[in-house]
Image (tube, rainbow, N blue to C red; front, side):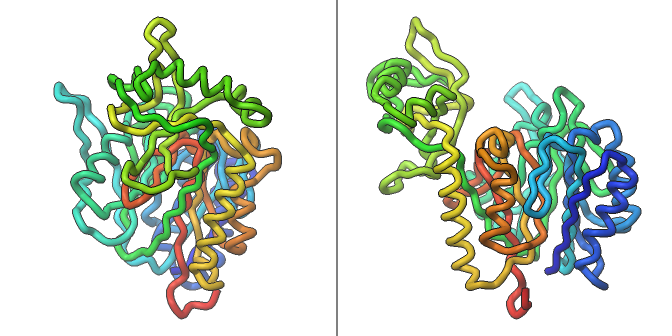
Length: 391
């Protein structure tokens, strides 16, 4: 496959779309684009249709998905405050199927419709979900339990602030609810997931829980365990804890020694002083292992660097064809002291490749053969160059 990308800093939807289409097509040469990903900053919420029309006016009709987001990624830049449009085009992927999905609440919980995942299918699935009308986690759990081998990469749209305010791109249409996705049956992709949090204190077995309420950890009130952990910290860890504490739930209970990256990170939503329970942003079951975490720029930097260095070594010096970067809106300047951290590190270690992406309200990515909805991660869909193609 070939890929091209463009980042255009302009508030004019027609000019930005036209220019993005021209620049992203150029690296493809005579090869027609067979798939596109389009991301635009929140400045384009009211002009998403005009932007998409300008893009497709340059590319011609093609399978395309994307969204309006809080901030966008293009090349080695992360644009967090300026109007920006990021477009990623690929050629030579073979057939691409785009789709939209919806979630309907029922008496028994809910049902998904619009697309049927097939068991054992090869290739890559990419998906972008509206946070208000499409709960992603039950779908991921269904895939994990019933359609093994089907992996999703993508993120939760972050541009809209309320119901029906999201803008999702699907081919030549703009949707305001549900999810949009693409199935690339002949594409090869390496999923990379890097977290921005670090465990502190000791891990505990959940000994009492109900829904999202963790009542006991290791036989004692969860709030007591949290308070004792906080009192035991010193120096930098204490300072980081003062900025916020998170809950890490072990993804694989059968793993060996656990380290950063082995936990599913969820926010702590509150605590009940009378019962000693804490509420976390996910359902927790008795028997799971939980360890408190802090957001840590230094360890987040080292983990992403380690993952990218391992990937570079595995590629044997061959530059990838391109990448899509789904990074958390809690990273960027909210976590790191320098701008463009994730995109810049990707370019430094894997080369000046075509990259596009956006700041997500949650990131989709497989770890250990199972799909998860992450927070505070950089989730990267890396497309290796075909064998024998010089990069």
